[in-house]
Length: 501
Image 1 (cartoon, rainbow, N blue to C red):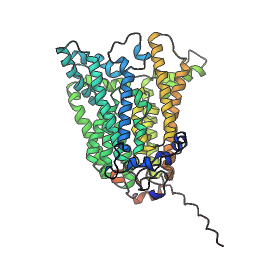
Image 2 (image 1 turned 90 degrees about the vertical axis):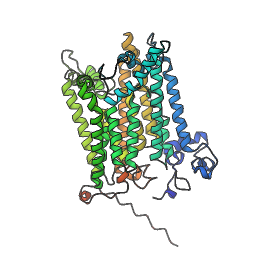
Image 3 (image 1 turned 90 degrees about the horizontal axis):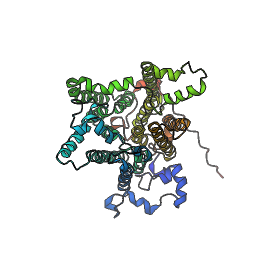
Image 4 (image 1 turned 30 degrees about the vertical axis):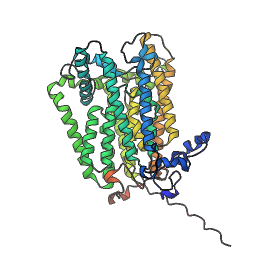
């Protein structure tokens, strides 16, 4: 399909406009006068051909900065650390960044891993120390400063820069679809959770890793994905889709280089702390092994239903039993995730056309969250850049974001109720919010799978000939051995010949 005949592509055939190509945006655009016109599309012309400062790229980057500024304002009631009368819950401004400055001993000058066990992977611990120890040193010399507030604001600045960099990466990957990045830049979840924890560190590194892969630099991509995996574990899961797609395209060498350098980066980053302070380094793995069912997960919903279905209080329901038998819960969670990954691999090999990397990456990380026993509020950030790359359509995305906002409010109600021993909402409200969040993520997965099986519905492929994130895979033919596995694309129905007179 040529870009000249594709709805949403401008006359130059270079830029997609959602108000023309996205059914949801086209529908609501009627409230402000209809789809984008010729005057507005001048925003997308190269700087040398027009005199406008506000190009689409600059608008999206400015929107990201505005969103992060709103997030900073939203968290401002908690920045002084004087959390009296549960203000961190009543004002929705709790952040691990400030709380753990004291809990991890950074305010006392303790070096992560050497002096104190850290509950996060090593690169996050190093990051905390790199910003926290200088703040402590300054605070020792000037007791008038609020060390916790300085530490939070320094983290907010760096993490905000990583968020803007992630938007820039999405823009670089989607030069013909710059407005896709607005999904990330304007996401309500980014407003609410950007600095709840250090997840944007891993997200930024993973985004640059995907960009390096798209630029056909597999070794660099591996190093960046390995560093991201040393900050939070999930970016390592992206290596699976790379390997499966490379197998289908007979480009395994590049994928193995990326995987090898990723493993090397993870080992090299972990080695100093693991060898010198093994017990403190192992704290992250110990917590994840022994942690019971956490709030808002599939398993938590099951525990609630146990209490509604079972009539014998002396007999544990299946989910309550799993919560009391954590090794079995861990095994079941890993097995379900493994089966989901196997299903994604089969889908990747059997799909009528090779799926895009963004599609498979989203499915794998979403499956991990769906079956995990822990789904913290800020984990929504993991999916934000991946859903933009996988399925840049506004309708289902906004439904998911509304569900995340509902969960955010219900979650803080649950926190406040636990702190005061007076429930804010009935437990069923929190479970309903958790179910809505889970359901919308599953629905997004279903939509992505449908577009993999019917690539003609894929918005990105309506603009690009193959996979702009694919790197060495982009435009590569399938391996000959795959012919017997692949589902055949349905032949287009013959068009009736025009009537002659």
